[in-house]
Amino acid sequence: MSTLDFANRATILVVDDTPDNLVLMSALLKDTYKVKVANNGTKALKYTQGDNKPDLILLDIMMPGLSGYDVIREIKSNPTTCNIPVIFLTAMSSSAEEKKGLEMGAADYITKPISPPIVLARVKTQLENKAAADFLRDKNIFLEAEVTKRTREISAIQDVTVQAIASLAETRDSDTGNHIRRTQYYVKALAEKLKTHSRFSHFLSDEIINILFKSAPLHDIGKVGIPDRILLKHGHFTPEEFEIMKTHTTLGYNVIQQAEKQIGIQVGFLRFAKEITYYHQEKWDGSGYPTGISGDDIPISARLMAVADVYDALISRRVYKEGMSHEESVCIIIEGKGRHFDPDIVDAFLDLQDEFRAIATRFADSNEDLAEKAKYIEKVRYL
Image (tube, rainbow, N blue to C red; front, side, top):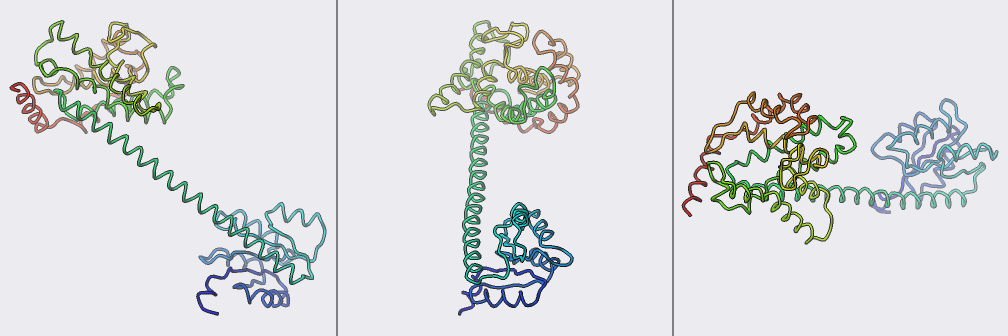
């Protein structure tokens, strides 16, 4: 017999306090299996804790110290050994004892004196059962790992796609790309703060908050469709120009709606992207656009974005203006409470002022960012 053949053999652990029984079982099994023996329960458990765990255990019930019941209880309670099949070897033939052993997790029950053909047949059966179970378990683990991997890949593709599309929109605007990041984190902070609030808890689960975080960068995607002469204008819009500017909400919604229609399925994060894009310029008192809805008719996602977007617009430096101070911006948000903004979201904002400052600092626009944006705007003006 080659070393390789021996290495591939299943390992049987025989546990019995009677030396003659250990010799008998070893002689019966050694030609087909690798055999380990233990003359008490403590030694048996040590064998199960090593790297080379047995594939099957033949276990005597009546032993001094740890009984067979004690041993199987430990084996089945340990995640690393619970799948090892155990066959009880016992001189007891009581059906109650057999029932007890099977209820504790024993795979089979053989009475003494043993019949060699029966022992070999039942050992073979249990090893085959274990091999099949191990195969299915390993396959399930592999499939679960593959699903997790694919899910991560899909999520990453979504994130990259959203960021790329949002960044494309930002390149045409007077905002820098950091506006995307800041508003994204403002929305998340507000949502986390409000997820236990009685008005929002039904909606703001951890999953929804994560989707809102991913969707938020698309809020101004519709600006891609606004002419540069309006989008990049430094002064106030004329009434006609403002009407055109207002269409960025509808343009953005239509772009996402069309993309979703083309792929033929409803995508969760696109639902909220559509809400945020279409409704983030609505106002609590109904004076916003594009539909003029008010109060709770405005989706929560858009109400969160409204506060985040306005705050960032106020504090941010632009090519053509300096940003307001945090304190001035807060005063304007407070003035908009109950008119522009959901009052409870404003209260959450006020509680989160330090976090908003930290986000603004973390993703602040550098002088280089503004200089690059200024070059782009001037270049576009002369096209």
